[in-house]
Length: 169
View 1 (tube, rainbow, N blue to C red):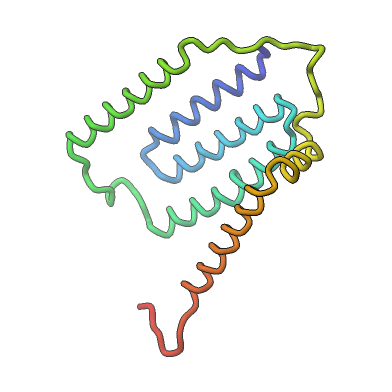
View 2 (view 1 turned 90 degrees about the vertical axis):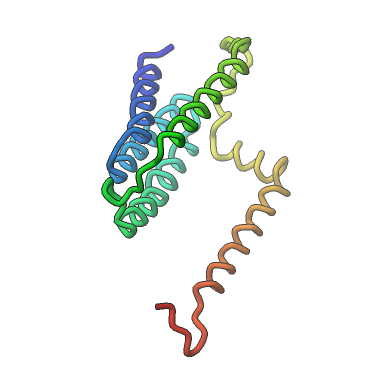
């Protein structure tokens, strides 16, 4: 394993813990942005430059701006957070432990495949290959996703459209 992979993995795990453990929601979003950047570094190590760029542009850019806007709009902070009962905390710990136990049990006998230089394809993560697979093998799911997004856009416009004489507040 390369030292860069180990460093990115360490930073990704620490920043993911920061997302969950941060008391301030804005700090949590900043930790999530750092997590997205480290995941983009992993994509670069896997020779998937397009996925790394899309991850930074879409997730670390647009989605995080939306998250920050919602957090600042709602003015979430520690004082306004309702107190959670001890039973809810215990149930969350049991659910998290159960998930960890299931993951360990499922991945217990997994052995990663070794690197084979003869069958390695250096163009596997490039945009042209991704486009060929997307538009040949996954053409129907791609078109269905575009119809779903179009319906969501039309629905949001219809919900946001005001009728004459209508007042929201």
